[in-house]
Amino acid sequence: MAPLLGPVLGIESSCDETAAAVLDRDGRILAEAVFTQVAEHTRFGGVVPEIAARAHLQRLGGLVSQVMGEAGVTPRDLGGVAATAGPGLIGGLVVGASYGKGLALGAGLPFLGVNHLEAHALTARLPGLFEAPPAYPYLLLLVSGGHCQCVAVEGLGRYRRLGTTLDDAVGEAFDKTAKLLGLPWPGGAHLERLAGTGDARALRLPRPLLGRAGCDFSFSGLKTAVAHAVAKGEARREDIAASFQASVAAVLADRARHAHAMLPGATALVLAGGVAANQTLRSALADATPLPLLAPPLRLCTDNAVMVAWAGLERLRAGQTDPMGLAPRPRWPLGELSPPP
Ligand code: KG4
Ligand code: ZN
Image (cartoon, rainbow, N blue to C red; front, side):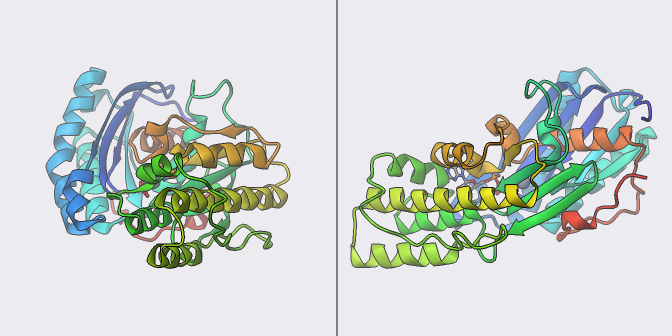
C-alpha cells in the first residue's frame, strides 16, 4: 500500500450536480459541498448539456475554495486530486477534469481521473458508513436518472456488469411517468408521495422481464402502459402512481434475485443513485434476497464529490495515478477500467 501524503480533493461534474469534497488520508470527510442545478433545468423538463457545462464552470471554483477552507487545507497540503473523467456529459467532464488537472499540476500533486460508476461502486466502503464495509465481492444496484445497472464489485478496479437497461433508466421511467401524471420534473419523489395515497391493486401494469434469466431491465413498456391508462382515464392518478411503483418494485426485486444467483458469493446488496430514496423499492429489495441491503445516506447515493475523492484515495493507496493527458470519456463502461498493477 502506497503511503498517502495528505488529504484528497474530489471533484464531480458529470451531470447536473457540481460538487467538491475533501477527505483526510484515512477517508474521513473533512468538508463536502454540492450545488444542484435542478433550478437551471426545470423549465426545460430535463438536463440541458450546455447549460449544465456553463453552470459547472461558474460554480466549481467557488465550491473548491469553500471545501478547502472548511477543511483547513491549501493545495500544497493535499496528497492528490481526483476528478470524475467519465462517463457523463462531455462539457461538464471537461470543466471538472481540467480544473482538477490544473490544480494538481500547479501544486505538484498526483491526479486521478475517476470513473463515475466506480465512485458509486466504492462509496459503501467509506470508513464509518456502515458497521463494517462490505467485503468483496458484493452486488451494486445503481438506479438513477441516467444509470440503471447491476454490477458485481469483485475488488478495486474489478467490476463486472451483470445487467443493464435495454431502454430507459429507472429514474427516467419515474420522471416520464410523473410527467404523464402532471407532476413537476424531476418527478421521482413527487410520484412516490402521490403513490402513498393510492391503491396499487386498482390497476394491473406490466412487469417487464420479470422471471427472465439474467439481470437486464426494461421500462419503456411500463411507461407506455401508463400513457394508455392515463389517456383512457382507466384509474385515478394516485392509483396509477401506486401501480407503477409496485411494478417497478416487483421488477427490481426479481432482478436482484437473479443478480444474487449470478454472484452467489456476494456479501451484500449495495444501493446507489437517486432512486434509492424510494422507500417502497427499498423494502422490496431488502426482502428480495437474504443479503444485507446497504443503502448509504441519500446525499452519498446521489451524485457527490465524496465518492470521487474516496475512489481516488483507494486508487492512490493502490499506487495508481493518471497521466495529465487523460481525456474525459462521455462513454466509459466499468469493464474498460484497467485493474490495479
Ligand atoms: O442519482 P440522481 O440524483 O442523478 C441523476 O441521475 O442525475 O438521480 C435522480 C433520479 C431522478 O430520476 C429522480 O426522479 C429519481 O432519481 N428519484 C426518485 C426518488 N427521488 C429521486 N425516484 C423514485 N422515488 C424517489 N423517492
Ligand atoms: Zn451518478
